[in-house]
Length: 281
Image 1 (cartoon, rainbow, N blue to C red):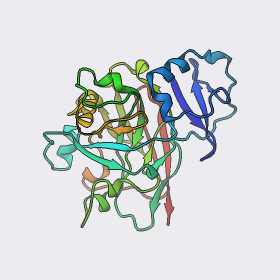
Image 2: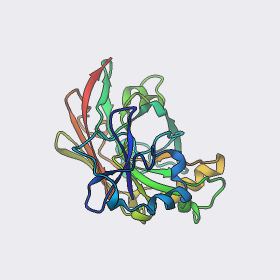
Image 3: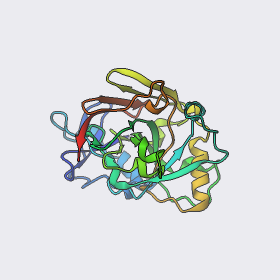
Image 4: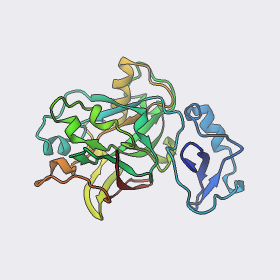
């Protein structure tokens, strides 16, 4: 299933995309699509709904984050060898884990807000997955059973805060609008093997990133096993898995986003995002 949340920010309603690609409303049958509905039991109930009988959603509404109440965001850095190489750094021996703030979450078409002091606003398209069943100390062999589904994320980054003097990984990636998610939450059964997905990103119509998840240093199953070794993962936890080469910081000369730029990105089967960069205070 492709599940989403549509409507103005703070007033989103749950929806589902039918076999013909049309958006249908789950409301009031379901009040919202929340983290507790990522569990296998809830997903089974949702999959029993006759989608063809649900009302169509008129026009093309705004799509918010596909899951309400995301608990926390784990991120994996340097998880593609070509991305590590373009930054001139060594591929880590273990997953490089950091966190992003949940206040950075936004919808798949919302503006990317560029602070007026920004100097190096950059992009990273990533495969994201949601935990659907609590995981603590799971093996890589059993790890995918704890993944509820997948989505597309752009890990927007202010490099001057990440890499500059006093820079920190999460600090440069946690500003408002810096984690757009969606358009959909796609259940794991519909995706199958998460290591066979293409991901891409364009700025102003020029493709800069074009990779595949088979190139990940640490695949999804390994990431789940590693994270669950140190903390209990809960339904509603969002994990973003790294980006392939093609970021602005790695170009010669370097290229960074400016107000008015259009950023479009997608992952196989997970839909497409489209954003305009806007100046903000």
